[in-house]
Image (cartoon, rainbow, N blue to C red; front, top):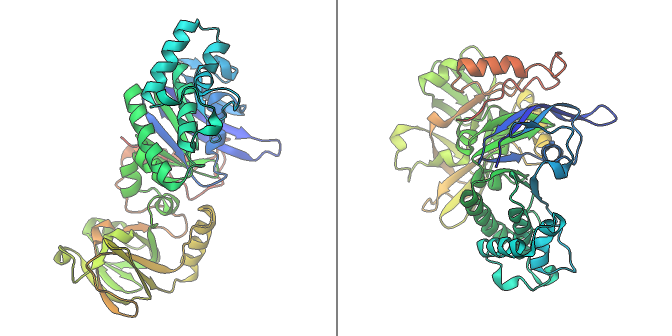
Amino acid sequence: MAKIQMKNIVKKYGDGFPAVNDVSIDVADGEFVILVGPSGCGKSTLLRMIVGLEDISSGDMMIGERRVNDLAPKERNLAMVFQNYALYPHLTVYENIAFPLRLAKVPDKEIDEKVRHASKTLELDEHLDRKPGNLSGGQRQRVAMGRAIVREADAFLFDEPLSNLDAKLRGQMRTEISRLQKRLGITTVYVTHDQTEAMTLGDRVAVLKRGILQQLATPRELYTQPNNLFVAGFIGSPPMNFLPATVEGNTISLPFGKVNLPPDKAAKAQGKGLLIAGIRPEHFEDASVAANADEGSTFSAKVDVVEWLGNEAYAYIPFEAPPEVQEQLTQLEKDLDGESMRTQLVVSLDGASMVAAGDDARIWVDASKIHLFDPATGENLTLERTVQDNEQADDTTRAPGGGPSEEPEITRVREGN
């Protein structure tokens, strides 16, 4: 096993476009790090640079104590699991798992021991004599993982390994991969566009946008302390609500009325003018059933649509947004691969709520969970900042060549603990 260090990694193609732009990530020995983001964000390109399938334009790629920029993939001792499994259809499961060992001319007895140990770990014992074409998608993915395990590599690299599976099987395989990684304790870098995989699998998650690292943090910190509008909109399902807001004193004015803010949040927004308030659907409730309704604020709003799911319901409440806010939401929708950022409030309600479409509902909101974003830059104004955060903010507002960044809204890269 080995740590992986990416130091100011840049990947530019022939036209000069930076697919990966000055990314620095340290993956500790035994850590599980997820690279996540929408299509075209550079996550797969970064993974391919780790394994050696893409050249690095500038920066240093370190595996253990070695700089591997100029090493061929076979010299890096990494095991990669691909999206399409990459199994040999004419070979049995046993021979597919054994293939890298046979290439390395490992003795037959040692091959047999390693293959059977891997197959037992992955519950493939009864399938060793079968061909890949006779296996389910989940079983084929486990065979691909078995081939990676027997190599005794320094790290595992996964490139969207579950994207070809149905939803139920993806959930099962997520659990299997998580258990396997913890059991083996091997350094792992995993690429996905699915934020559910990112939040449930990773020790830390790196969120990328247009080749630039937006935030590197634990899943919990990404959820509770997003750096900017992009991270806030990408993490969470349904996504965070974004509403036009102004703050005066300790009161925030929203399209549906006024809400009292905690003094520390209100202080950070004084004199800022028009802002974007970010509130997750789960931080609302029907005031008539909210257990802690006296600890927050309430407002009245006309409900357009209600989706009842049994244990919970979603209420949709339309609103109007000024051009400055609408412009940011339109851009955010493009950045998030078309994830809808329409001007409607999505409210999560307890399944016991009797709110129906057309009602003027009384809604409770947990004001302590409100985020405030600058509509010009997308920066989250309500984060708790440290001296280190401010130093990183200065660094990340400059491009790799020392000039102004092409992404002014990225004001810092913050690492989770």
